[in-house]
Image: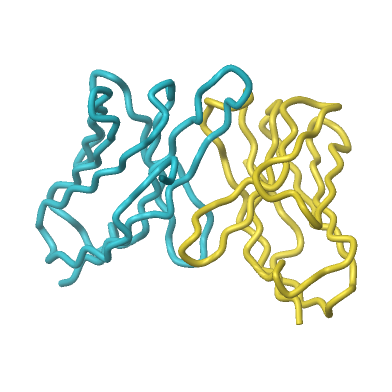
Length: 113
Length: 112
């Protein structure tokens, strides 16, 4: 049972480059989330998709876009990477939106030079 | 004031010790509470949900105090493998903002 799978695990970008982080879950969950985690700041919600076909901004959406491709997949795109986007990115999913237990992928460590 | 606040620690305890963490939350409308565990450079994983009546899972006990707006986690007979960061998670409550808020975590180091 894979749970939540994120790719890639590591990435180094130059300022201005673009990339897409992929996330897929096999638990038939309705809701999916993208977080970033920085030292001392905890997890901060970037975007979420409460259900297939919907996406909404979280706490720190600037510089990111998302696509809920289908019920399984939720991607995060950096159009023009900046050093401030150096972080660890986690994708998560839950059966229902908001109050439910969230299950996390292994994370993507991104460095923007 | 942060929505969810935790003492960052680290709490440095010997094996076999009992250790307790508290976490305060600001929104009295919050209804869901969890403790997650995060190992170094790994993803957060659910440790336990926190119910109004309190709950216990082996060496771990979680309590909720709605009046004072805090949750606690008690770990008895600490093991070396308990060394990790413990994240307090609370839903934000309210009519249009049912999302989970993660605390910054409390780091626990269990020494031999």
